[in-house]
Image 1: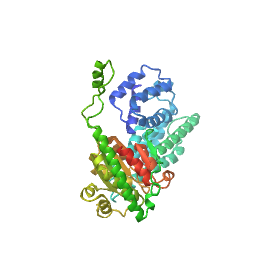
Image 2 (image 1 turned 30 degrees about the horizontal axis):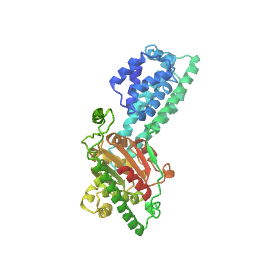
Image 3 (image 1 turned 135 degrees about the horizontal axis):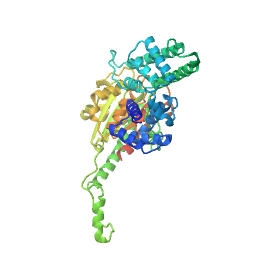
Image 4 (image 1 turned 120 degrees about the vertical axis):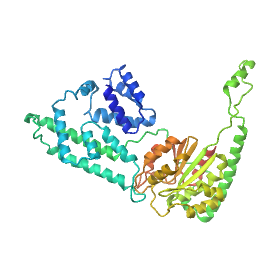
Length: 471
């Protein structure tokens, strides 16, 4: 049981779940207290020890099904002890499986990908899962700037090796293996099992399990506030409407600034101190007539904005930046970055110029290439290398973009790293929800790593979001 638990924990680590040695030891101790032949109970003990949050449940379930059922030919828990003893007392099918694996080794060129697939066929998924994880997260040393072809090429090579092994398996007839003609049924069952494992390897190659995100808040509608401009998409505004929109935004900003100023003024004495209040109530027979407050004012939040400035998104992003910097007194700090296929820090523009002037200069003077294909994956990688240190647990990260990355590598694992560093991630998408699953949109991939996902394509929706953020 110890060896089995250790192997399963290693598989979880290969899927990027954090499993400590202490948790493995606790799990082994807990399994001794339960009937391991009761599979629901057995699985519950493993999940209680290894799955730390609801986000890990889908990855755990995927690993459990793969390890205990698919790779073990739908293993019954009553056979766990027999499976652990099989290595010392192999039966005929295991001997034949070893001969088949050795035959494949002689027919293909052995490299890390081939070795990982061979181990996977042998019932050891750890090497293959680590190999796929390395493909997913490694920083590519591509000769062509912003190229994502390296990782895709390696996946294609793995796919070709899977297909090559699939063609070789039926050709294995057991010559020289010493098995009798009566074992033809055993050989056929082995070939079917190997073919199914190659199917599983293929599925793992195509798609990695995403974490659950049941707490995600998706907002697609808003209350009507401004009848004239409120429902007009930003991209459809004429120049006179843009000027009218700016005046409307100025009025809203003044209102929100007044609300926030009053809120902080009334709370400069701090939050209610329950313990002190209860102690003071003793002289009034337990009635809290005197309230006590902590002398700690409410802290302001920090905002980091990451804005797509491609033509399809900039019309919405500029109004978002306008409102953020007009309300910067409501936050401890506001930092802004723009991107197309790489990032540029534009915070200094807002420090040196008026908000509207700064927004105009961003599209002409920022250190960024505008005439390139939008690439969210390269943008996240660039941010990780240069600006990851600006994120902390006081930060609200706001991403403004449609998530369309021209079929390039989305690198969603970097967004997962960003989520672990910040208080929350809010994604504002100027596209209607009905387009999120079409074409090159990766928004359904990214949403697993966001705390909130909003449609933001007109003034009503932007106003509602700003009020939620500030108030």
